[in-house]
Image (cartoon, rainbow, N blue to C red; front, side, top):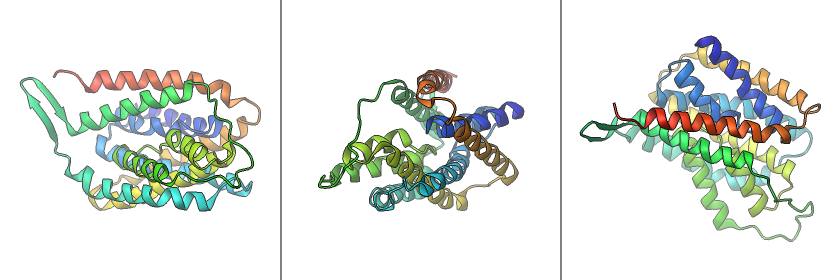
Length: 265
């Protein structure tokens, strides 16, 4: 299964480079089902992999001046605080067994994986639907919706902290709708926010996690190679046409995980 895991690691980076997102949603399932990593530890590993690959992607956008540092700070502060609270207090306090009624048991692993599956299903819809939002290139004079931005930042940070997903499919619409950023700038800024959230979340998790660095670094390196390959292929292939197909794949995986984890023993 490890060979399949490393092959899937290429897909994580490839999808990020080719269609601008989605790859991070695969990291936890790859760790849990292909590398047999504990679900909670898998979310910690995912934070590192997602943070490292997003960093590589955000650097290229920064070089093209398609990254708004001011926006990243405004959105990132409540998001990072939420990541800190979630990884430091909420995740460690979740009991190993949440519910036990007769033969029906909900464990910590089952809860986190079911939550992740629901997020995958939601993300797949975001990938498959056609976006009608075309932000204006001239954003001067536009008022920012700070309360909505604050709520969105806290929500994204909580999701990142709980299940180790980057949340780009949540961040990009927020940056476009609430801050009126052009789409390409929103993508670059989103990658930078994901980098900060994920790596900060990983640092907050090290103290109560046992990290097997050879596995983590090898998966991360392969995913980075994937994102570089995807970025190159994106100049030759229209990623927008592949995005709906990838969305169906993510939907199928989400449904599989949900059915697998929420079941009677």
